[in-house]
Image (tube, rainbow, N blue to C red; front, side):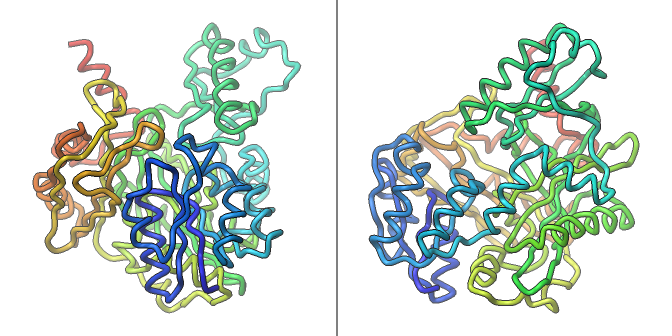
Length: 449
């Protein structure tokens, strides 16, 4: 590889541009009209306009991206996360155009992107699943609803990121919730297929980072706890999980490796599990066949540059097993700084950032594409920065994150900074007694006061 098309925007685009530069690779940034002045565009070797703001006319237009790669002499494409990163058809189109797709093979993306097919594969390996099942198109819904063990969770088969997902508490809620979930799934993913799972009330969301090369080497880099979520979307992540024993951690990571060995996987990936706190058991949820937003916490505890590893693996290099098999050390926490108003149910707050002061000091990292004058667009995700800290243990990392959040200044838009500061100092977070429902239930209690 010599020149990489960065088929994304914002923070992850800049992250890829930097990783490519350190590997001696040229980059071509693509941008929609409102993204013309973003740092990733300015730092790339070259840049090319895609089109107007709506993603379907820019970052989701696969034909346009392939044409851009060809026109600018690229020989590889990095999809980042979101947009087309888990679109098997786009990955195949890259290969058909003689472009290296920096990610797993299309057949693997397709197999694991179908959540129902992924569950069948994992079940065949003897790995526990959350009990659930499919919903036939011709099912008599009223009768079907009466058979379910409430509460249940409806999930889009082709989905992710909380879209096409509904918690259903009673049979009377089932049909309207299913209609809404199917509509949202069709709009978001072009596939209205929805399945159901038992809803685990006291659950933690724990995921394992994996890396696989084209030489049969498969490794894990420990786990991340991503249980602090709003509307099934992550707000804070940490590594390692403060909940797991050494034995449970070993079982979880070995299960993740069994999956990638069966797939003969290649590139970075994440195996996501639901941990039932009351029973002390874990269950497979899904696999993300891309780099994750929260990958920096793994990088901080392992010293491994995951985006660089993606590039090396795509270029045919072998994983450095000696480096990968070193035990993680210390504790890392990531707070997603979003242009949202927590007091209004995390409503997006687009606008211009008029002042931005980033924290620093030992063990502090900020991944952002923003600066004073950057406009947070209403067309895209509201995340403006990721604040990551590392320290020797969790208590010290929490103190460091509080200090870093206090240093962070963002003016011009409302952000989640104060929300994170408050959460980090609650007894539930300090003692790690929260679960995936904690933020929603806390907001409900505050509204009732």
